[in-house]
Length: 154
Image (cartoon, rainbow, N blue to C red; front, side, top):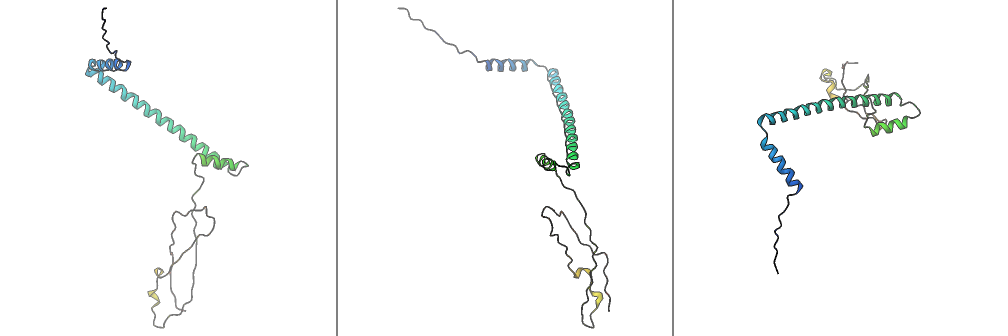
């Protein structure tokens, strides 16, 4: 009986073949080829940036249009749906307002006879106005300023 021996050689995978082809191609590239390839990538990157900027501008215009439409129609019969849409799109439905008070405060006080009334100034008083209305109102900053202060003997 004759003995037959076979030797099995491993066939390279498709991945190994592609990897070798890519490696061979890279080794064949000249510096001019590489520079051209990089220049092409830079052009593609710049085109992508311009496209991105254009798309962002168009999207912002659309958001501005929708925001204006929602704000202009909040008094309509579908205000609830518009508020829900604004909430879903993170559109802020608020406005900033300035509230001013002109307050005149007078007090009669009794002081010792030798008291120097000129020693009293506005910093001796604590003037506070508190908002106690709707909880949906947020105060970002507030200030109280004394525009006119005087003392006088009676």
